[in-house]
Image 1 (cartoon, helix red, strand yellow):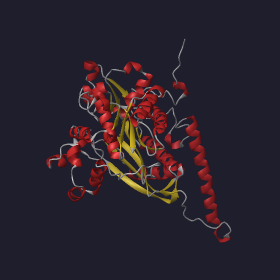
Image 2: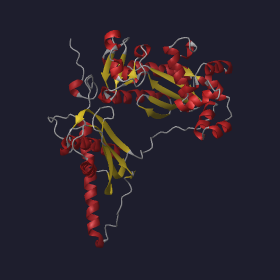
Image 3: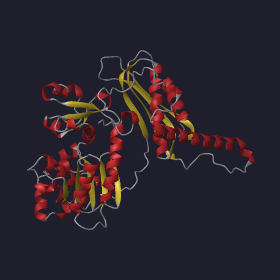
Image 4: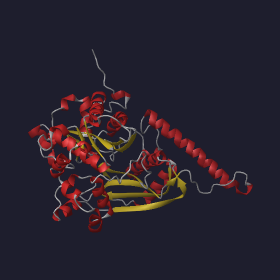
Amino acid sequence: MYALVDGNNFYVSCERIFRPSLNGIAAVVLSNNDGCAIARSNEAKALGIKMGAPWFQIRHLVESDGLVALSANFALYGDISDRMMSLAAGLGPTQEVYSIDESFIGLDGVRGDLVARSHKVRSRILQWVGIPCGIGIGATKTLAKLANHIAKTAERKPGVYPDHLAQVCNLAALAPCELQVVFEATDVGEVWGIGRRISQQLREGGIQTVQDLVHMDPATVRRAWSVVLERTVRELQGMPCIGLDDAPQPKKEIACTRSFGHPVLDLAGLTQAVTEFASRAAEKLRKQHSLASEVMVFIRTSPFRQDAQYSRSVVVPLVRPAADTGAIVQAAVLGLRAIYRDGFKYAKAGVMLLELQPDSVRQGELDWGDTDNVSDCLSLAQADDKTRLMSALDSINQRFGKGTMKMASAGLEGDRRVWSMKQERRTPAYTTCWADIPVARA
C-alpha cells in the first residue's frame, strides 16, 4: 500500500501562510523573470487562468478581478517543503520525496484505519505548517496518485465524486461497484504518466475513462503503445510495478540556465552570469558526490524580439574530472569567450555539466609509496586540498546564505547586474533570512 501526500496549490499556499489576506483571493505565483503562472489558487483557476499562462495575457485581471501576482520565492517554498515532508513521514515507515510538494509514503505494516490516520496527519500539517494537502491511498503508486487527484477534486468540486472521498481518498477501501463509478467519472488523461499525446491516441481508440483503460489487456497495450503504458495499466489493475525510491538517483547531467531580466550587451555581463551559473551547478554537483568531465556553456538572443539572432554553444573538456568551482568556472568562461560575438542582445545563458561520475572514482590514483610518480602524488594532494576548500565554501554559504562567498568574476553585490532575474513581486524570505523574519509587536 502507498499514500501520496500532495500540497494543494503549493506555492500559493506557502505565500498565504504569512499573508492571510490572500485567502479567498485569486492569486498566482509567476516563474523566473515574472514570465508565466506556475501556481494558481482555486479562485485563480475559476477565472480561467491556465497553468503556464503568460503574465502579459492575464495581467488585465488585476484591475478587473482583483488578481494578485507574486514572484516565485523558492527559498521560502523549499523550507516550507522540508517542514511539510518531515510531518508527512509520520504516516508510514518509508518515504520518497517525489517533488517539492509531493511525497510517496509506504504503508506496509501500518495497522488500523488508514483514512483516519491520514486525516490526523493532514490536520497536523495544516496546523503546524499551514499547508492544506490531499492524501491518496492505493495498492500501487499509480493508484495512490490517482486517489490523490480524486481527493483534491472532490474537495474543490463537490458533486464530481462522493463527498467522503474529499481530502483523503483510499481506493483500496472502496467496494467494487463504487470503484467502478469513480473510475468511470475520471478522464483517462488524469492518470499519472499519460500525457497529452498518449491520452489523445487513447481517446481516438475509444478509451475515454480510467475504467476503459483498466479493462485493457496489458499485452495489447504493450504492442500498440509501449512497455511504459503497459506498466501503467498493470498498476491501475493493482499490480505494483514501480517501487519506492528512498533516495533519488544521482543526476546524469546538471544544468543551471536562466533568462535575463534585461538584455545583456557585453562580455563582462555575460561573464558574471556564466560564473554565477557555473558556481551553482558545481555546488549541485558536490551535493550528489559527483565529478564532471565536461562543461557545456551556451548563449542566445531572444527569438521573440525583432533583433539580430545569435545562438551558440561549446563543450569544454576538463583535464581530469572535478567538482572544484574554480576549475568549472574557468572552463565555462573560456568557452564563453570562444563563442561570444559582439553586437547582439543576449537574452539567456546557461552552463551544463556533462559526463558525470562518482567522486569515489579518481583518475590517476597511485600508491603513495611509489616515488617514481611524485608529480602525480602532488597533484592528488592538491585535489584533496581543493576538496576541503570546496567543503568550507559550501558550509559558509549554507550557514550565512547563498552568495556569501563566490568567485570574483561573478562581480560584487554593488555591481549593476542587468542579467539578474525580474522578481518585482517577491515576498520576503520569512523562514530563511534573519532580516525577513516577521516581528509581532504588542
